[in-house]
Image (cartoon, rainbow, N blue to C red; front, side, top):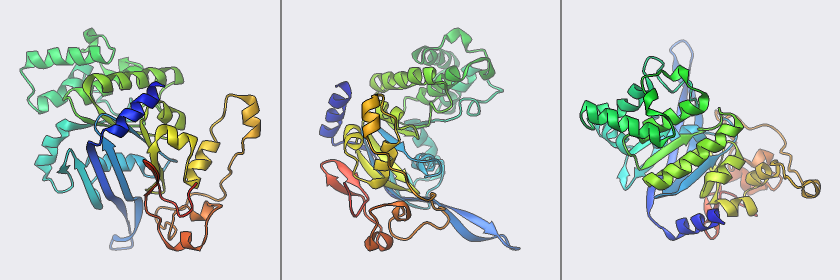
Amino acid sequence: MAQEMKAAAVETDSTTLVDVKGLKVHFPIKGGLLNRTVAHVKAVDGVDLFIRRGETLGLVGESGCGKSTTGRAVLQLIKPTAGTVKLDGVELTTLSPNDIRLKRAEMQMVFQDPYGSLNPRFTIGQIVAEPLENFNRGTPKEIKDEVAHMLEVVGLNPFFMNRFAHEFSGGQRQRIGIARALALRPSFIVADEPVSALDVSIQAQVLNLLEELQEDFGLTYLFVAHNLSVVKHISDRVAVMYLGRVAELAISEDLYDAPQHPYTQALLSAIPVPDPEKELKRKRIILEGDVPSPVNPPSGCNFHPRCWKAQDICREVIPPLEEKQPNHYAACHFPG
C-alpha cells in the first residue's frame, strides 16, 4: 500500500531531475600490427531515461546488458560516445573537465564492491572526509564533526573513524561508502548493485537505510541491480535493459503485474512464487539461444533472435520506446 501511494505521488510530480536521451557508449577494440580500431563493443546503444526528483528508478537486466555502464555514463565517469545527459536542466556531456568536477558535488555513486571501493590506506574518517576536503567544505574541525555526523546517519559509531576499512564487515563497509557519497549532500545518487555482494540478511538492512536516507535527504536514485525482487522492493519505476537498450519502462507495480515486452515477461516468469498451487499453474517462459554479442548485435529489435513473437518487421526496424499504456513504455512492435 505504501509503495502504491509512493508511486502515485511520483506520477503527479512532473519535475524531471535527470533526462537521458540517445545515450551510447561504444568501446573500441584494437587489433592488427598498427593497433587500429577494428570493431566496437556497443555496451550502451541508444538509451532513453528520465528520473523525476525524489524517486527511485530501478535499472535491471542480465549481466553484460550495459546497466552499470549506463550509470557511469550518466555521471560522466565514462565519456558517452553519443547522446545527451541533463542533470537539473544542465547538459553534462558538453561541460569542461573543471565544470564536471564542480558538478560532482550534486551527483555521487555508491559502488558495487564494498571491499574494492574503499582505500585500504585511509581510515574511514579520511575516506568520508576526502570529498569534503576536496570541495573546501569547512575547517578541519567542522569537517571532522561532519564526518562523525555522517557515520551516525548511516548507523556506524563515530568513535570508529580512526579504524581502517579492513576492520569492518561487508555491510559496514557499504555503509561507509554510502556515508562518503552523502557527505557533499548530492541530489542524485547512482547505486550500482549496492547489495549484490552482501549476505541476504544484510541486504535488507542496507536497502532500508537507502530508503530512509532518501526521505531524510531528498535524494533521487538510479538503482542498478540484476535481482528483480530487490528492485521491486525499492523502486518507484523500473527500466529493463537488454543488450544496451531499454526494453521497457514503467511504474514498478504495472511492470510486475502486466509486463508489455516479451523479454520482461520471460524474466518475471523465472521468479519463484511462494504459493505452491500458483507455482504449479503458472507457465515458465524458456528463452532459446544465447544473448548476442554486443560487438555485432542483431539488426532491428536486438531481442528478435530469442523472441517467440518476432516477425519480419522485428528483424528490420528498431522499435522505439513508446508509451503503450499510461506511463508504461515498451520498445516492442507487438507488446502485451
